[in-house]
Image (tube, rainbow over all chains, first blue to last red; front, top):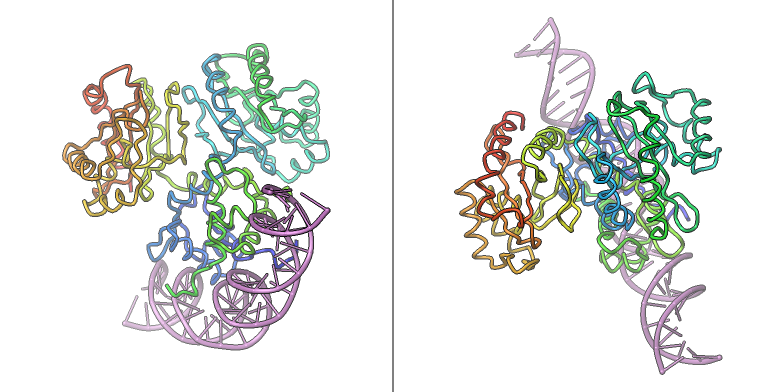
Length: 251
Length: 251
DNA sequence: GACATTTGTTCGTATATCGCACATTCTGGC
DNA sequence: GCCAGAATGTGCGATATACGAACAAATGTC
């Protein structure tokens, strides 16, 4: 690609959108400039463009994104076949086992939820399609990291700040890599309250016809209901059944 | 705003993203050019920029969005307080009445789901935060249209193609405006299988402290379980309770 | 296999954008 | 009410981008 095939203004605008997020609903021009590293004048032009197009509101002082911005993410969810194919299987799975079931893909060092069938909510975090979690401490993240080569997994781990969400969170890079290698061998990943106390989960990979892991599915359960040990006994079979049924349907 | 405060390249890039959607997961340069009205050269530059930034994949022929694009929509959902505030109330509501409960806001002539607590899935459509439905034939759409002035509601209706999803869909603009006026008076909207056969729903507005309708919540139920008539008898009170509890929490 | 058509790429130039420096307005403390 | 500090708005020259046309490559048709 020649450098004239790159639209700097577009790239900058996307960075401005991403500057909004958790705890940052309303940003001033100076805020955005600081968060993105863009010149104030440029940040201002991007924000005014967003506002002009209806993607943002401007009260003269602060900018806030409008629901119209959801069209962008929705372009992916409705355009990509994967979520639509998986959803009915998750519904049935969730119904059968009486727990929440989800599907996600890897985006850098994070997993992104693309479909979900939730039973009564047990987590404090509200997960929905588009939600993100760090891969290193989520069951789907572990199995997706395991589906990569050691080098690639290592690289993603080392660029993640290994925050201890609970006392159980695995934060040592070497232990983590060992765990990932074991997950690769056994073909599933179990997380026991590493992300949130009281919550454990088990995940397997969705492998397509060419043997590539295109996504992961998991079942999450309250730790109070059963030992982490029992997760595999109860849920591994139904998870694997779904994975097998889906295999021929995945590109 | 001076016209130099508008970044054309950014606006064009956003149009390119929106070109992807339902049944259009993979697009060639020429496809995007046709869909957006942009010059082929410009469309190409936008697509290559998206690909360079990791928002799209390129196989030499077709472009497809990647999950990274979900960061943009997620910037809104996680940044905006509204979904977070409403979600726990929807969970409780859905639990109490044993039906799915949702919340949405108006974006042009469409409603956009911002939170949802689903019981067993009854609709063929898979709704999730970010999903869109035409306002004119959805219960939340009707109550949100009613919360606008007649002129504004009229304008939005006239720019909507009034498609008859089912034999029950109201497609006459005049009848629709009458219905909306009645909804405004009675303070709730009932939809009886206008969007999908076998599904009915009832919605009320969420009004903030200053009296403005900032969102709507609804309860959807299978038509087989009860007459549309009974919706109000059973669900209006719990919906209104939630609206009352939420009122002081809304900006 | 040759022709017609569509699609992708390159190029020169007119034009719009960037980032800087300066002007202006806002904010909070005293 | 005044001042200092911060945030926002603006004009301008250098530079990057958009456009349309022309070219090249691929695709489809007969």
